[in-house]
Length: 370
Image (cartoon, rainbow, N blue to C red; front, side, top):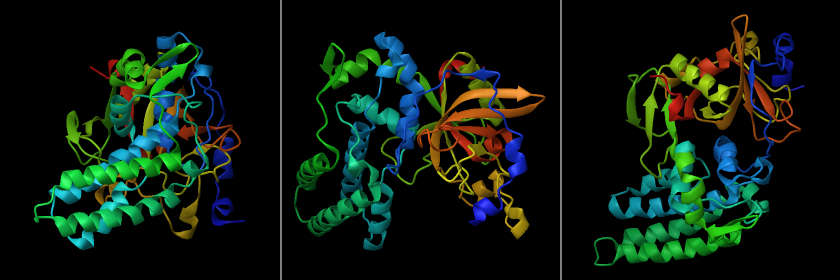
């Protein structure tokens, strides 16, 4: 028995049931495995039903290609590395930090929005996940080897009359071919049933208005509410990321409105205590799920986590239900760890976990409080 099983709060688990005042029809539960692409899966689930309506198709036919978005996410980040090295004077000691922050598969809803607006979407049968997709750290290490050579050449040729942008173009052509070997070749057309269009034309016609209706919100107590902030919950950025910082109860009311209108809500959270891992077979997210206070460890409150910059963005999922019996709020969450994990692929989240650990959101703007 490991420490998590030893200090699990079994009495708390028994207080949860699967009944909800508001509950969306069940979603297909995907298994992201070790791909670290929760943010893409959750974003596709957020827009899935509206896209199905736009196409007049059954949502069960809509399996979007996460792999396609992952491919272009890598492209954008690699391109950003070269831009940083070319335009800024990086000390060699800082290059490792740059590589670590840009060679990864991390992202959020703003990242997703940027990528699909630029590259569109295709369906899973056109560019399915492959074995490489579930080994992101191995891919990171391979790309780092290649990029270090490129960075070294840029640094050595700086201020010596070389056209560094031409050099970058050469590197990116090489990287594109490398990524094709890893992820597969991205399709040029989006195909579903009898419909076949160039990728961007398909996206602009059927999906763009849906994605653009979503705004990114955050709830950070150390920032003034009701203001937009150009911040990133990741160490890197691939585009400007504006978040509207709102008070948490206001956000909750907007989420409830969205759920009542049969629309899920994307969110990002911090998992402190591993409470969202595969290990969590009970499918419960609650601050006191593990009684580590018995060995002198308390869960960091959000205020302290913010203060010391450890309110880490660990995972993205979607809200699909809400319940408030006798003032005891709980939330239903669709996860992407497969049906055999958590609670048949879902979590039940207590309101205290929401308060302490959920702080990023993407919600249709029509549900925002006036």
